[in-house]
Length: 316
Image (spheres, helix red, strand yellow):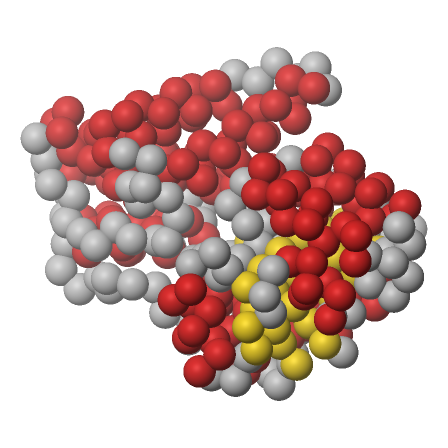
């Protein structure tokens, strides 16, 4: 199976690297020539433009920063889409938009599957990330051999659009959790607690979480580089808020989460790393939330293994 991958950013490059590492016949494309050159040096082919990649490949995967970017790329690929062609969307995007684009792909006889990922860049790099797969069962099964090389746990979420809805939900939860972790660390520092002790107390308690056990370490180290910028955070939590509004859910915490992140972006810039959001409270209190012995980057030490499909529990 010839596979194309478009979008070699923080997450995309790591996902494409998993395909290349696992021997997939891979063509790649990005507007930045540097990652393209790096992948070519490692054995991939430069695929040219999106239309050429869809013409030459059976499956083309996109991992792009915004719904507008996805629309631009799919529009270029559409003339080359027909029976036997599959578009796999791995971006975190708007569910309505992915369904609209999926309909255009289907009208030309192709298949569309959305496959957003969750678990952080460090797990994307090792093939241990989780993948939500939305689309027809037959289409998901067609690309499942690729998904089990890209990720560890694959969940078929239902029709096209369901995976994108679940993905923005999980990113909202992670962002809200990051903000509460920041408040907890700063409050404990103000109350005279040792930060390393505070980290361990949270870790062994009912208050622990994936966000704490990963991002708190980067906060305490001072590096605060989780490979996820505030502009992307705002995109995702904004999509979650829009989803709630579209369905008449009067959220109370979500608007405040958005306000805090917007304020952080105004202070630090759109490209600031999301973990730097703690600096709002550091500035307000004059405290420094740092501790010795924590890593500057996250390393996934779980061995890479073939992925597998996770199936929801069935009633009865």
